[in-house]
Length: 374
Image 1 (cartoon, rainbow, N blue to C red):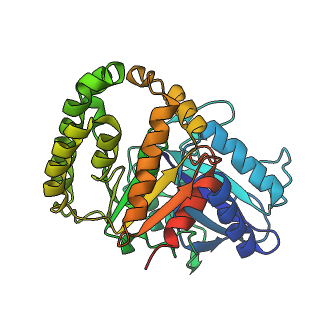
Image 2: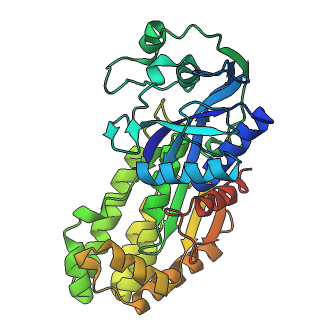
């Protein structure tokens, strides 16, 4: 799960609107995915005499810790020309504060969350209400409407205009069903999970961890290949046929970290010829009934990177996976893709990308998916 973070942004020096828009862009590129942006508000400076401030709040999803986010936003402030002094209140080109982090409480020397003054400031509360979140102050135990009613700030905080959100033009819900595929260790589950969180999608994750044949297979492939592949096929069919048929009113589309055709790809690599013929007969019957994805995304990673990822995640039953096996699986996927003339396929080489640590790599993948929207 990604961290859900609310930030308050303000500016009262120079081109205030441009400063805020640039800070949102930099947050999206460097810190985390900007999910929602409030309206733009104007209010008098708070605690000192100066030009009026423009303010907004944003909701972001980020893999970074609160400490890492604080460091990142301080760098953004510096890049945008903010010069900090010892004064508590002063004019500034940009000011970015962490208002909330996972609706939790942090009390350290350099960081207090929720922000200690947020309940006293309409320029924080009114934009926060715009985000449409079911926000509950973790210390005061008050919802946003009650915080506004109880706020003693009498300053004129007025709505100016709407603000553009970086994902306003990314309509992944144009797809009903996206399948994210890739070799073992390619990152398909991580990517599918991030997309589901960021774009309000129903997620379908393969439940491989509960398969009792998997650890046995990696130790003795010839003996356990057939029961393993048959059990996977049965589990995948049962899960997909159920989840794809169940419409969720509260989700915009479906994203899965596998497509059932992977069953045939792996079976072709692991089974003996006579076993594979029997397996394919059963698979063909099942495959005809399964819905096909509107977009099939294949994450390609070179074998060296796959082995590195497998080692890092430390699953004991995967220690016996060898490069030759991964090469065969990859070739099986590529052969399948070549044979599917009617499938909307997107191949993304992620061998030199880390879409968990590097936000820009994740946004690159989203741009690639966006390019396939019909």
